[in-house]
Image 1 (cartoon, rainbow, N blue to C red):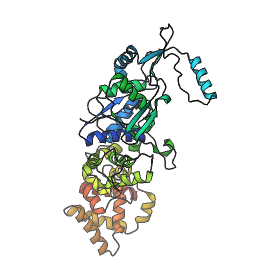
Image 2 (image 1 turned 45 degrees about the vertical axis):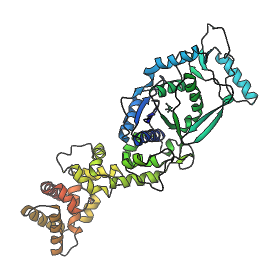
Image 3 (image 1 turned 90 degrees about the vertical axis):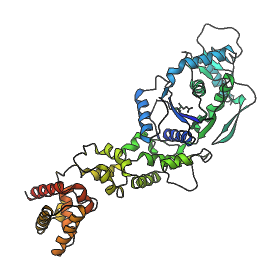
Amino acid sequence: MTVKTRFAPSPTGMLHIGGARTALFSWLYARHFGGEFVLRIEDTDKERSTDEATQVILDGMKWLGLDWDGEPVFQGARQNKHIAAVNKLLNEGKAYKCYCSKERLDCMREKQRIEGKKAMYDGTCRNLTEEQDTPFVVRFKSPEDGETWVKDLVLGDVCFPNEEIDDLIIMRTDGTPTYNLAVVVDDADMGITHVVRGSDHLNNTPRQIQLYNALGLDVPQFAHIPLIHGADGAKMSKRHGSVAITEYREKGYLPHAVNNYLARLGWSHGDDEVFSREQLIEYFDLAHVGASPSRFDQDKLDWLNAHWIKASKPADLVDEVNYFLKLDTSNGPALVDVIPALQERSKNMIELADGARMFYVAPTEYQEKAVKKNFKEGTWALLDTFISKAESENWSGEAAHQWIADICEAEDVNMGKLAQPIRILIAGVPVSPPIDVTLGLLGKDETLKRIKTGIAALKS
Ligand code: GLU
């Protein structure tokens, strides 16, 4: 059997950290087995579903590199299949039309509340023989006794007594099928073998299993992933960082760092914390997904981000650096050559891009405090000597570094007396990667141009 999983978000909101983790686990499971991973946009709630939300979900998935097979499937476009399933159940006497008015149902629930009973449909229309000429919903005839077992790959076997499951509405008064019905029809039709989703759906699963059985469809395997809690143990909310996954990009996180972090949020592989994408695919299994909620840990995410910024191949960082740089880099050194100079010193991609900017944009201002501190009487002469040296000899970063050392030694001053002024003139601030690397990347012409422009600006 080829494994086929899906991610089935409702485009009624953003793709947040919990949804992204569900998508990741589902994707990893399929990729681990060389199976298929599909994306189904559950846009049946027309009022709350928006194209923007769909786009945010697609963008988030793409950014994380969770590629799906084939085109995304839109659930709304499959309504005929859902209606056909409802009619099949009606024809076979496995579902019925319920004419109960809202008032009647309110009254029923109130009575149940007073009697301390669980609120559930009392089956009034279950055995009606006459059709009525009033609006109706269609309810599924749920078995009255026995039990429904969810054999969950993460939570283990979970038993639901059937008497606690009431007759579910599978089609609304307006003729639209409901979530539980649509999801069963679609998962079966799309050949989904493993339904990986958040444990907030666990209570739907016995209902869905009953529907599979009634429709004569194969029941897939289920894996319900425990929710993510904030560091304080409360359900994850915006306050805890549960923002759209794309906002992690804005904050300078690397997609792989987010994936690595999310994978460990609930899944374990010994004591390992750091996994490459290939390792995640190789090691991932549902057996090692824990059954209790995981706690979101911002420090660990930050640590993994810094780790992956250092450990990634420069070429793999180019897209993210460009995302923040937003400028033409063709007039300067290749970004892949600049990135290694900054990987060690950057905690996030914003810092890395900020560090790279100086190689493409000459300063127009020079930090006042730094100028005051580093430009003294003798500075101009040191700079002049450096310029003459550079103009008459072969340029390289190492050579430039050596000239600075020699010039300073001859004057019996420490290297910072010349290196810092040069930094300020080429970057506007007294910080840059090591001076040999920086000057090597910037090149002779650009370095000298900036130094001369800077001297003129500071002297005027
Ligand atoms: N559309 C549902 C949701 O976004 C998920 C359904 C499922 O995974 O079965 O919560």
